[in-house]
Image (cartoon, rainbow, N blue to C red; front, top):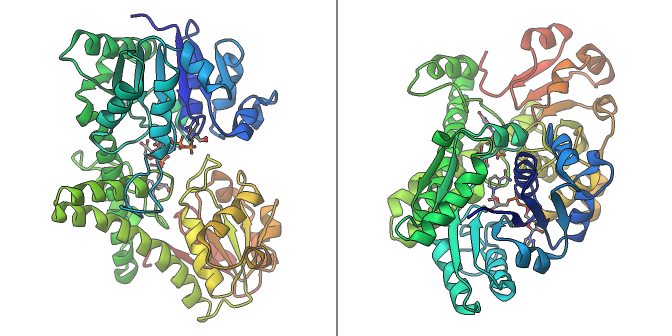
Amino acid sequence: MSITKICCIGAGYVGGPTMSVIAQKCPHIQVTVVDLNEARIAAWNNPDVNKIPVYEPGLADVVAEARGRNLFFSMDADKAIDAAEMIFISVNTPTKTYGAGKGQAADLRYIELCARQIARVAKQDKIVIEKSTLPVRTASSIKSILDHVGNGVQFQILSNPEFLAEGTAVADLHQPDRILIGGDNTTTEGRAALEALVEIYAHWVPRERILTTNVWSSELSKLTANAFLAQRVSSINALSELCEQTGANINEISRAIGTDSRIGPKFLKASVGFGGSCFQKDILNLVYIARSYGLHEVAHYWEQVIIMNDHQKSRFAKKIVRTLYNTVSGKKIAFLGWAFKKDTNDTRESAAIYVADELLAEQAVITVYDPRVPAGQVYADLDYLKSRAADENRDLVKVAADPYEAMKEAHAVAILTEWDEFRTYNWQHVYDVMLKPAFVFDGRGIVNREALEQIGFHLYRIGSGE
Ligand code: NAD
Ligand code: UDX
């Protein structure tokens, strides 16, 4: 089966970049990305390609190459679903905020809406692909909806989780470590569907990197991968606290253990805590699934990764308060960075939000500078926590367009994101315009200790007990 038309439901951080790269690499396939969110679709269609809604290095060029040729962003989901032979579901699957499983289980209502819409609209056989991250066995729910609400149309369900990381999405999509496709290879139709998707990726990914498994393994592999990655960060962060007590240095430890080929060097960077839309949500989901099967030890084991991460964010905030003579009330603290990591405008679950919230509870005055995050997003993130009135967030938090303005007359600078530009600031100038004693709290381990201390700063760096 040769695919000529693809529809993707969900034009977010995954759907947008993923489909842009498929369209770029497969100019013979028409790719239409649809979304309910009108503003988002309008932004993807912005004639100025630098104003697309997702900031990712290199993405604007990919979109510029394919958009209007074989890549389209549209609100007309019915039309795109009807026309496509293959439909990716790439909608959000956030943690449930209500009912059974509140605070842990994945909220699958958007997935179900997609399945019902596909069932309603489809007139010919379709391959439906789970691109969203889903609890293991979701494919059977999707299949049940499609088969029972549909009109005799045959559906094949594949699981094709996405492993891209934000900030490096285009590079990850161009050269993935692997592509994972779960499907049913026990039937002719199932095998044909698997092969159809393999063939698309094979346009640019070597075949030996395209792994096929059964559907359940594929679904569960995605949760497992994120759990393992997050666990490494929590493990190194746990030891960063011990380093601070003992005079050991977490960067030296990362290097020492990372050279062991069994451990490997990646994902061992101590930080103020991991953020992003995936790690916490997916581990909570894993914990919920384990518990729902009565596997309490398994659930408890993975839950510790989240507990450690919450502790890391909180102890950073507490360290700031303690160091500033146990009070930050009325004191200006400059935040460098609000995004959950560098090279993205995404702020979901960013450590900065939680550190700010704790400091605001202590009546600090915060000025945020982030090269990619607009003021409205900073306020939306704080308002979402419902810790205080929206007015109060706007009184206590300012967003600066210029980093030096943000740091002027501040008691302390807190580095929350590892943006490259922070490394090259004129720290002497920063020192000159700050109040004294001038404190820097480096939650990302990016500034040069000797240089800053020579200038006169008091520096705290995560995981450094020197
Ligand atoms: P997102 O919130 O950025 O985008 C999801 C989009 O889906 C939104 O624009 C929303 O309006 C749209 N949507 C929801 N329901 C819809 C419907 N019924 N019809 C049309 N559009 C609808 O989310 P995301 O970050 O792109 O994540 C999507 C999925 O991919 C999630 O399951 C996530 O866990 C997974 N994932 C995310 C990442 C990441 O780095 N962000 C990486 C791998 C996997
Ligand atoms: C993650 C997975 O890496 C990706 O495969 C999956 O598809 C989606 O979830 P993402 O959340 O975009 O990607 O970014 P990632 O690079 O994994 O970073 C997540 C968080 O961990 C960030 O806040 C980052 O700063 C933090 N982190 C990462 C550390 O604190 N230390 C590290 O060594 C690595």
